[in-house]
Image (cartoon, rainbow, N blue to C red; front, side, top):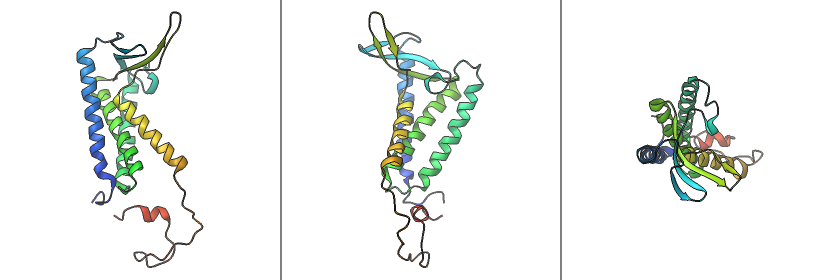
Length: 192
């Protein structure tokens, strides 16, 4: 059995929701917005656009001839699988960790689908500052990117602010182990 009933496996439904929302919004973008234009003005500083990202975040390695498509696809598969493994071994009572893992999985799979099908990621959300003599734009992004960033932010907050367990405090005897000290990490993981 891969995961116990008490694992965060049910959070994979959130990952699926992220993938569906990401793919539907990208489809709508491609269908309704002409590629390479300033698209639909939502506000004076936010447009829905239709652009392709052949690289990673912020178009990193975008102009490298195509090999980066397979590198980033492989990284998404490996890291996504790692987060699935973590999610299946995390107790569902650790809601924030499960949420972070699920968002990251959904975002990674959403962009992976684009890379495998198109060879690039479709981005459509563009925030910018424009005056008469100045223009600055944040790199366009999509729903999958939002999910990955929010998941990463949650993990950072957990790492920085989660209460730490005092390792010097003796543990009470545990009926499953026959007494003695049990590390907190071993106690948190489900037994397989």
